[in-house]
Image: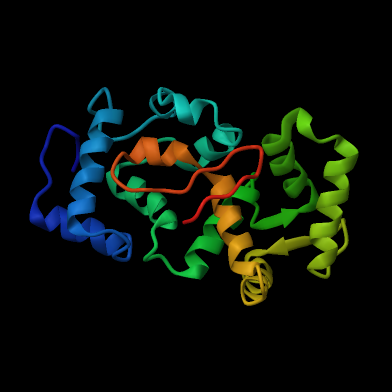
Length: 207
């Protein structure tokens, strides 16, 4: 799998399947590889930021620049591991960890009030005022038992989100969180699996 001119062997497929914790079937991995090769226009075995931005649905996604931090320079194995967050076979904890990475823009292992605000700015654009966004951000942290000056580490984030998911409507909120992270964008980028859609209107569709 050093470059995309080569074909996947059975060993390659099994190795990738193991790497993504069996989130995809072997046939799905083959389909994902075909899409990966289409995106990897120079055949170097990696997908660059520019190649991802060549997908119109990705370029217009409100979180595209944030997601490029996670996507730029992925090889095929990493590409599949990234997409596995949207698989129905992926565990709740793996999905929560993915959401945490989206919120943790600077990669310092913490989600602060400013991180939440940053996501809200990306998602809402001119549809919300800064005052409204600040109010929502403060409410999110206060509901989790924190102040606006606090930061959530991954273990806290997992604990709080698991607690929410165990309550009425919590699973729906977790699904919505995944959807605002993506997207018809990844569905187009992967081309092989049906993934959730999201828009700034916040309208939801079933996973």
